[in-house]
Image (tube, rainbow, N blue to C red; front, side):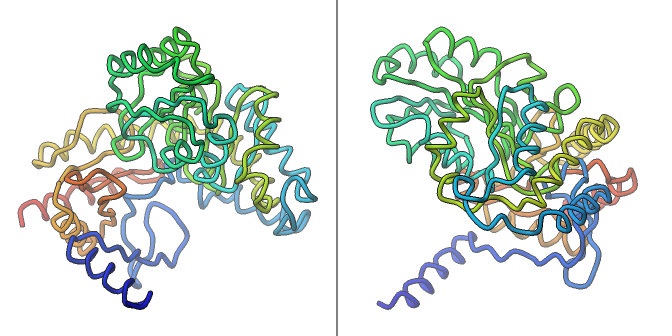
Length: 386
């Protein structure tokens, strides 16, 4: 069988299982509404939580930086690609999360794929939450350390694993998200910090979906809980409205990663224009208390009203509201019915989520209006009746 024939057969299998994806094309700026197939629809599935992706100050910062430093860095960071905007962004991000130092990466995925194997290796032991993001899972695998997966947010199970297996490795780390990207629930960070301290284990927290949304001036759930992780990962493509990611940690850890994180060492440097705009974005996020309040108010309204319509939405306070359907084909059908009514919510299916847990992932933005949320609820009510 040729490679083309094999690809077609595998695509057919995905289609039969209701798992084939074909992303719609957005032909407008990213905002509370977007343009798809020549019509404007309400966007309820982006990670643009604070609505900053189209903020005029960010557009101006990008334009100014393009004129000043150009579009590309021209090389990897360790060759000639480290430019003054990269250092300014790293300093601003470190200050934002209250960390001694930070290091920029091209994406959140690249950060986790570089940081975990850059700090832990064969002969070490890792303890990873079962619902961690794919980038964390893959980073753990690439480290070649021994990995123990504990049931989602099950502290007792984690404690038992630590008691038995902590001595399996020289170095150890507990790996978790702070706000889980597909379920919208939160890690018990104080308890994880205590377990890490009790067992001489580092704590690695991915704050991708919490930074900008929670904590004092948006500094995240670690800051809100007054927990200091040994390693903190943040992304710039969500509340910051840009693209890229960073790791925040002590000076020695960051310096080591500059030399050992392969996705940093062997990648061209992020665009200096985006790095320059990151300084502006960080300030916008700090000053976005009003936007955070609006975002969380939308989530607080949607959750009970969706439940009242008969949808399965778990408890929580975050702006990530999963509507559990189960069957992937039924989930896709519901997403299409909503789009027909002008509401864009993507169907989330395996392998993004475990088999049998397909869902719609509803995410409001701070820039949605009360009328937008009413329109969304009306569309959900109509599809539910049908």
